Length: 99
Image 1 (tube, rainbow, N blue to C red):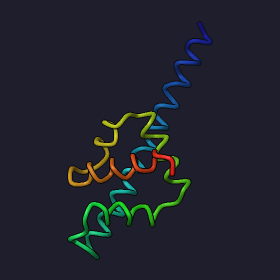
Image 2 (tube, rainbow, N blue to C red):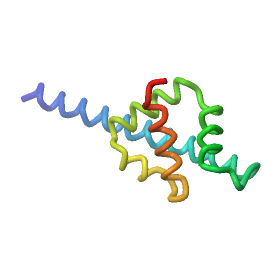
Image 3 (cartoon, one colour):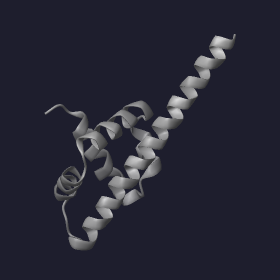
């Protein structure tokens, strides 16, 4: 019984960490998109995606992808303000595809 409790606790801790990683990733993506709005308020979705790609590290992208895969696509919507949801999801989905 102790092993099950430990296993359940580990699963809970992992899910909590993944949710925190996803929240942090979404927040950073959102901040980058808000910065772009200041300098280029008419940026297209393609330009927004390119900007976030240019401003983030490979390590960040891997963490975001891992968190999204673990938390599911709907989870990212929880952490992004409405105007950024579709672009944010498109960005992370793009990172999921091998180049």
